[in-house]
Length: 111
Image (cartoon, rainbow, N blue to C red):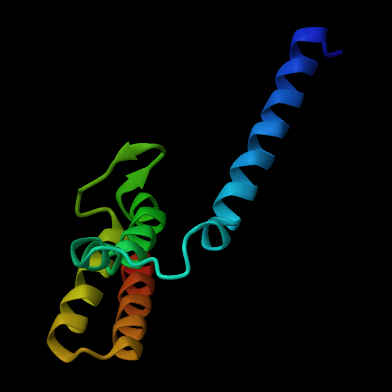
């Protein structure tokens, strides 16, 4: 059963989340029509998708049971490194994905 303090916290958290959602979603309506980021900021924003993807994928590659695992027993890390090398060499996304999947499957079955 929730007590009064937990109800207040829940209500304040919900209101806070609503405010943050409204402000972030209406950012483009609140800025002037002739708004531009500085060239430095535009260059920095080009890295945002890659950084977000790395933040999502890196834990599944580097962690095992919430502990950093950089050993040769980490099949995901080895397959990812091989796929990265293949992509750096050939610049072929489909080949990179196929190489990573084949390497990961082979490492799991053989190891």
